[in-house]
Structure formats: structure tokens, C-alpha cells
Length: 372
Image (tube, rainbow, N blue to C red; front, top):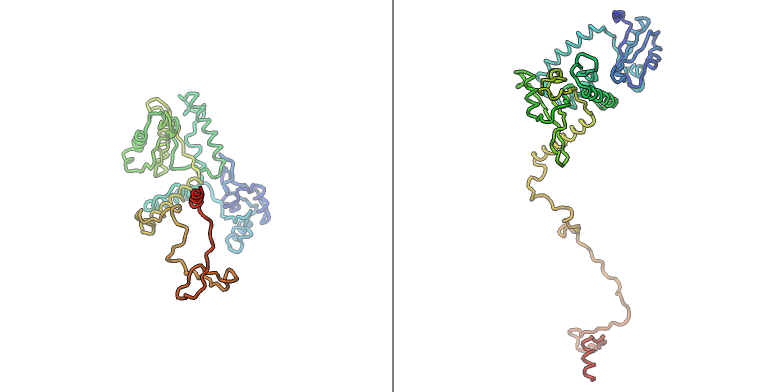
């Protein structure tokens, strides 16, 4: 069907809310003029909205007026749907979109040569969910690629496909375009063996290219099966082209492991929340390390303060304020003063007799012995 974008009646809408459907989009733009259709772009795998859509007006004048009004900053509230300001542009044909995409790719490749490597979380932030990679490596029964596969391998691939569909319903799950997940591996394959296989596939230049990760997952539970291979691994590359080349070469290849097993290779699913948590933890560790290097923390263990359990809760006597003892205004007891000791320097003072106290047990026994 030939494209009619040259008529200037179709507008491309971005930044749509994921809750907006075709009817809601049609009702919104119907106030600006007569419409032929209004469609929200959906992902073919998950049937979720991609946040974009197309609106086609009956007259090109209405489309031009809407596009001109949306460019004015004071009209941002008029083009807000579900608390999200929409970005409008004139729709273009597929051929023009491919040309712009190739031009942007060339510009990005020239800029990436001097750009530092991004973390996996930042890379996923820029590329999006990459749902178009969900079908890469898919093998269905009855196709030419399924020839030679056993019923067990086909059942395993179908189970993995259902598991992938269920996980992709979560908006936090992304498909990495740099990391591969290899399943159905022989249990005797080690990390070094798998890295060497990947380097051989990438060719002579593979030594200079970066294979950032090559790890066979193993059982870490204590027991007889500890450190045994779990039959799957992860391989990460520095570029998407290298990762795609490894996927096409390893997926369902009976010659990689000499007929033992046919590997199941697909792009790995990543959890954005887990990656963000890992990134924040790395930032905290880096901040603590920088403080230690700058000397803001105690360098020697002997300089550290004692534990809280060994610290005295009493205040430091050197810092304790002088406590003022209140003066006694009146005596505690009233009546005549009885002195039991002779006052010095006063020989005429009346001698007082000290009252007899209770006798001790020793004196009592001695008195009883004397009476006998």
C-alpha cells in the first residue's frame, strides 16, 4: 500500500500515556478537526502501547494548524493528555525513516569512538526495552531451522518462550542488546572454554574486541553438587554487532560442542530495578573509598574509638561543670546540742556521757562465761 504521508494530513504523536487507547486518542484530536483515524502503536509481542501513535485529519489545513499550535510553549496545556504533554510532528514514510535512521546511526558511531563506556543500566536507559530482540534466535517446530532437533529440545525451547512472554509483561524487564544467555550447555564446559569459543567466532579481531563477561553459572549450595555447572551461561560483548554474530553462530549449532548438545542462545532479560540497585551500591562503595583515600576517615585501626559497649556513660570529669553545693539554711534537728567529745580549748565545758551502745556477741559470751 503506497504511503500517503506526502499529503500532509497525518501527524505522528509521541510521549503518549500507556493507558491511552485508540478511542481516547480519537476523541482528543476530534476537537481540532475532522479525522479519518487515530491509532496507538503497540508492540507485536506484548501488545502494550509504545507511547506513540498516528492521527490522520481529513484536511491538511487542520493538521498544519494543530502542528503549528503545538510548537508554541504557551499551548502546552492544550496538548496534554493524561497529565502528559504530547510531542507532535509530521509523519514520514518508511523509506524516509530508514534514511534518517541510517544517518543517525553513522553519526552515533562516529561519536561513540570517543565516548566512554556506559554501564549496563545507563545503556538500557538509552536504548529502551529492546522488545524487537525477543524474536531473535526463535526456532519454531516445522521450520527449516528445527530440522534435527529432538522433541526434548523443542519442548525446552517452547517452555523458555512462554517464560519469556510472562516476564516481559513486567515493565521493569528489559532485553539487553549486549548480553547473551546460553542454555542447554554441556556440564563439562568451563569459563575459559566458552570464552575461547566466542573469541574464535569473532575472528582474528576478536582478541582486540572486548568480551566483557563470560561466566558459566554454577551451584553454590553446599553439598556434593557444589560448584557443578547448571548448564547455562552469560556472555556480554562491547557492541551489539558482536553479540548478534555470536548468537547466530552458536544458536542451535550441533558442531560447537561436538554433537553433545545444541545450545539455546538468546538475548538476556534484565531487571532494571536490580541494575539500578547495583549501580547505587557501587556508587556508595566508590564514595566510601574516595573518602578513605582523601583521609577523612581513620586510617589506623588503633585510632578508632572503642566500641559502644566499652564506652563509659559517665561524663568526662575534665569537662564536668563545677557543681554548686547548696548552703544549709537551717539545721536538720532541733533542741539542745549534745556533744560527745570534748571541745578543744574549753576545759570548763560540761562533760557529756556517751550513751551505752549494744554489747557485741563476743562480750555477751564472755560475760556469761564469767558468771559461771
